Each structure stands twice: as structure tokens, then as C-alpha cells.
Image (cartoon, rainbow, N blue to C red; front, side, top):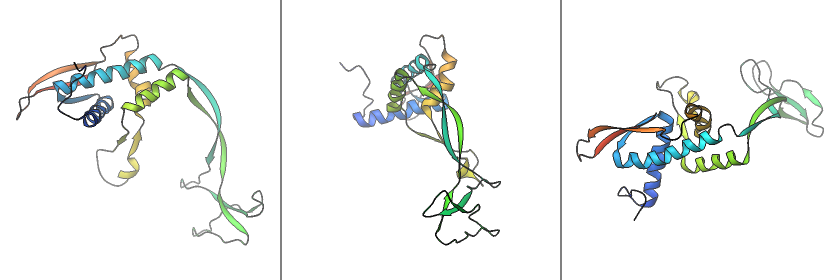
Length: 203
């Protein structure tokens, strides 16, 4: 006897559907779906949240030196001209003239100026790294887009790290709670095929 619902789909379609719905549930906090799908999604989502709660504090903070491109007042990268043969020899501090055109220098090449910064990062311990990889096998990448379309619409679009959201936003809410991270609320039969519709949401 199968330990899961087949949902009238082939295995690859079923896995894609469940991954999609689990990602949507964790991103939005609630989804509307049929009761059969909700029960399957609930199992997966509860497992991921339990994993995140267990491993959320299992990291160490490490200070690293990072190379960061220097920017001017307009937010553009600062470029300078250096000698092709001797990169330490600077021919011109600014690679552009007042009109924004690149200055040509004999035997010179344009390079970006970098500064070194100290940054603190979270380094996963082995068990948290394993949990992160388990989550990445289930969750899809999410692109967050602004509600209003207009000027700067594409710049406001950003990638959401769903694993980081699980560890940093969702898991701390359920510290001290043993399971039962989601709930199913029945709405009623769906118009058309009379399938029972439910709201699946995070508690």
C-alpha cells in the first residue's frame, strides 16, 4: 500500500506540484488548495520547519576579508588606468574625462579599483549544512516582484533565499513548539468538480 497520495499524476509531475506548493506556502504563509494536496504539502512543510527549528542556531560567526569595488557618488564603479606591463604603476587615477569618455593612454589598460573590507558571515556547522542541502532539494527559487509596475520595476525585483527565510524568519517563531506548525481550514466544495477546498497556513 502506498504511503502517499498519488494525486492522479505521474511521479515527476507530482513531485513538481508538491515542491511548488511547499515553496508557495513558506513564502506567502498560506495557500488555497484541495484537501488531498494540502495533506501531502503539510507533511513536507512540517518536516522542513522542524529541521529549520532544530538547526537554526547551529552556526559560527566568522570574520572574513572581502574585496569590494569602490563606487563614486553616482554609484558607479571607480576605474583607473594602469600600465599593462606593471599593474602596480597607475597612469591615471580616473579612467574617464569630465564628459564620461574613457581616456586613452599608451600602454595602459582600464581596471576597477577594489577596497578590502572586513565582514562577518555565518558559517554553517556540518549538520546545519546538511539540513540546508535537504531544504534546497525541495524548495524552488523565488523571485519577488513589486506589486506596482512602473519606473524601476526591474531593479526592484529580487531573488529570495528561501532557506535563509526558513532559518531566520520562520524557525524562530516556533522555538519550543513540538510539531503542528501548519493548520488546515476547510472552505467548502469547489465549484465545478466539488472537490473539498481548504486553506493551508502556517500557525
